Length: 390
Image (cartoon, rainbow, N blue to C red; front, side, top):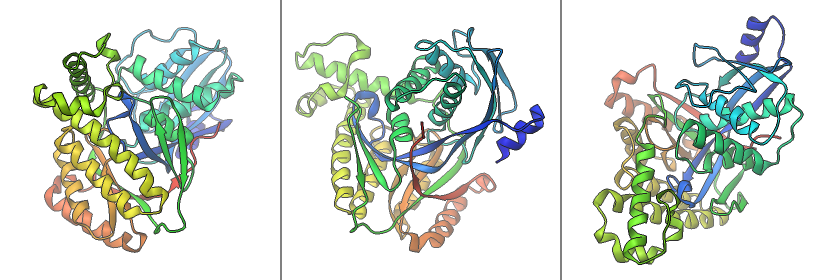
């Protein structure tokens, strides 16, 4: 791997180990985990590798093949606030881990991503792969839930993104050929195996050429708009409510939304419409997967994508065009934006028989609409995989 070669070039020796965390997709369940919704997801056979060795002086020194600047800090003196660069996710991971454990050993390493940055939850994968390395050199053993919680705390409280636990859960709990069906309200989950009746599928990633980042996007605004709608619904219905940040759609029945949605400002109503309908799609999708009906699961994923465009109002023009092309292409069961839908990529579940024709059809149609993306746009065919090993 390139990260191992780069490590040797920088330090003049081989790394002691390589940490890995897979990327993830969420075909149904987008924009819901931050309000205690349900999700379905798969870990991918691509992800983040970190070639690393311990540093006994407690210094953390990290480089990335995707970013030019090397980052450095001491485990005992993590900057109290984010610094505004790519390494904030790693600083956040160090910060969150030191709240629970006393660290003595630092780490030096090189990070490599095997797909472009663009909606596959590379941020959570970087955090988790780094936590694995930092725990290993310090002799710390985390449970799956601890790893999920610490990675979540790093991104939400240090980096400042209003996420739920979808990304971390898919990347830790996922199993090859099994759909993760997770309730983010209580962390309960089921791994639903592929039914013998299910038609074969592969996962296509269509990278738009637009680099994705939740920091600085409208992601946090959309979450606040949903929460504002939920807060108002509680007041309209005479329900008990507390702090704004504690308002959760999961705690307001669908019937309350239907009764009072006409009193909400249109943006707030749209965000709520997405959340409540997505909740139902997840439940239907899990049952479709259970019985091996990938066509129905794919149809629900397409429906989820439509709601992301029209109700959640996310998606750059390039992503929206990719989604439209996917819906018109033979052999695609279903798909949507991958991630929050602010630039990045789209994912699709495809019939492997049509793999080459799908790549050709989508590529030609997309580059006809956006010729300036030639050389930036790309297609990757992936499979499902196990989540991160602990």
